[in-house]
Image (cartoon, rainbow, N blue to C red; front, top):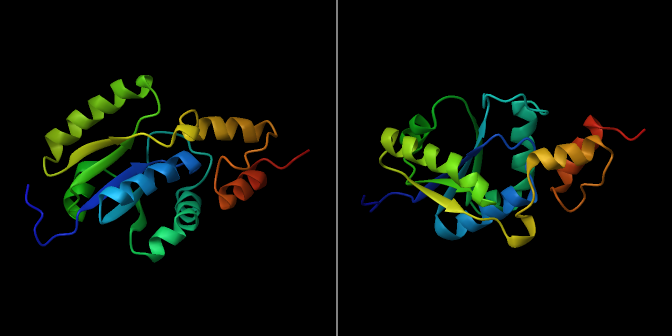
Length: 169
């Protein structure tokens, strides 16, 4: 597909409940490959998130503020079919993170479906920095719920939001 005259935009969809330093690592890597990365915070991801869509949107915006100031990253909420968002935003790629081989099967199936529904975009699999391979939002929530310290695992606004959700005893 020729992209002459268009912005090479990638979409990075996810629940981001909450955003972690692993997510930020992927966003930074994607910024090295594409002119613009649109982080699409999913409203209805078929999950029961800890944070509301608006809270997740704000945490992501605060976390990527420096990249957003450089016009490399935009953040918006999305609800619906990813393929429709791809077409609407004229994206050339969908960014997906792989931490381990166990992530691959599900992500591969999703990539094939997205290829069928939105041929104009390729799925690009990226790995976070090695220091974040073990990290997931679920782990962060579990540590925080059990009064563990998540400093250094998540951006500061997220750590503060988790303290409000799980105040110390």
